[in-house]
Image (tube, rainbow, N blue to C red; front, side):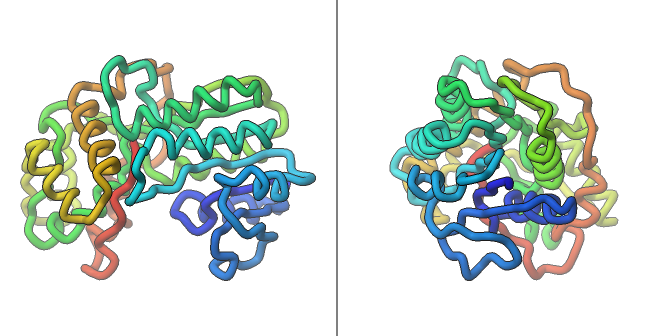
Amino acid sequence: MIVVTTPTGQIGRRVVELLRQADEPVRVIARDPAKVRGVDVVAGSHRDPAVLRKALDGARSLFLLVPPDRQSTDVTEQYVSYARAAAATASRIVAVSSIGRGYPEPAGALAAAWAMDDVIEASGADYRSLRPAYFMENLLAGAGMIRDEGVFPQPLDADRPLPLTATEDIAATAARLLRDSTWSGQDSVPLVSPDDLTPAGMAEVMADVLGRPVTYRQQSIAEYRSMLDGFGLSGSFVAALTEMARAQNDGVYGYGRQPAARTGTSFRDWLRTSSIAATPEGARTRVRPHS
């Protein structure tokens, strides 16, 4: 039995699908069981050790992903609280963190994910920390502007290469590790796409795929913060995302990075099937908390 958290989210849902395709028995933890079909469900939050203990009864592995909380008053404590619950109840964990661990400056939501790693590792659990780069899916928040106006805005330096990861590759790696009973101990698994693109280079790929001009526009940190404030996010969440953007501009993803084969989905292939290259419906997604 494998226990999966966030089964209605983009990554967790795909992990469940891949495990079921492999005929693995799956149990999920969900706040709203009515949203989940076809698997054993334990109602509640995986922030609650009692819920986790119930879900882990007879299970061999846990997939942990900290869900975004747009109204969080302390993003680091949010990550740590989920980690404490998992560390107290699970002996074998695969979790989604981020590359860049070891960066010496404030890193917002990235540092919160690394704090999660610290807690789980201190427990002695067998652990695989998935460390993706910048989620390609983060770009979907601006899909309409990219597709309809030909403008690609981000608070990132135009000419600094930005390592990328597709969430499909995160889910596939998680499912593979959850099914594999041969590993033990603690290690990290960096996930970086084959691309070596700057934001300006990404705009060029967008223009080629869309068949019309796309111009990259670097937002100032002040502009970015103002945009986030307009989404109604908590001050803590805005600060975590703003610090993350500053760290990305400082090359955070180059810190503490293990050599990683650049495999998985290319940016061009991801873009072709995304809502950026499709119809306007479904172009917007939630702001993601890390990576």
